[in-house]
Image (cartoon, rainbow, N blue to C red):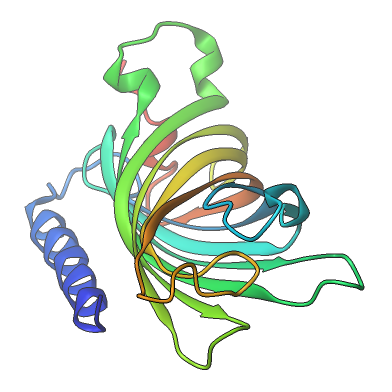
Length: 223
């Protein structure tokens, strides 16, 4: 995949946000924008060629930052950047790979989408997210960059602290399409044949919303 994929993802995000922002009513009752940051634990699932995958999981070797725009109080879009570092902790084994990922996802408020009842919704939320991205992988065994397509899906439980501040956890699965290098940094096949990789991210983070309304769309209910 080439750099043009990032440009297309960025253009798509700005078009969606721009069109929907102009369509917002002046009397909206909630804030649309929020920013977030998270870190946690990653668990690689594939490919396992040349490596023991258990050697490459790790805590606090990942970071993600993003921005979200809620088109309605139920549906929105999110763009994020992620960094993941896979390295073998053994002093006898060298090598690894670093992932830099950019992605765009659709987001849905599960409570509102499923019409869940209960007062707990005032402080406890649940988001579902699904999208696509591009990873720029820098393996130790190559001076080049491996361009990997991604499919991302996950759930994000939230706990509101104030009207504009929330803590959250996140469980996501990331599929790596056309991965050419192992997590140890070695080329998987001499003929550059690829495999489909995958990993699970378990993260915790903070979410800050902003705007001129009292609360964010995540916590707004038109009773």
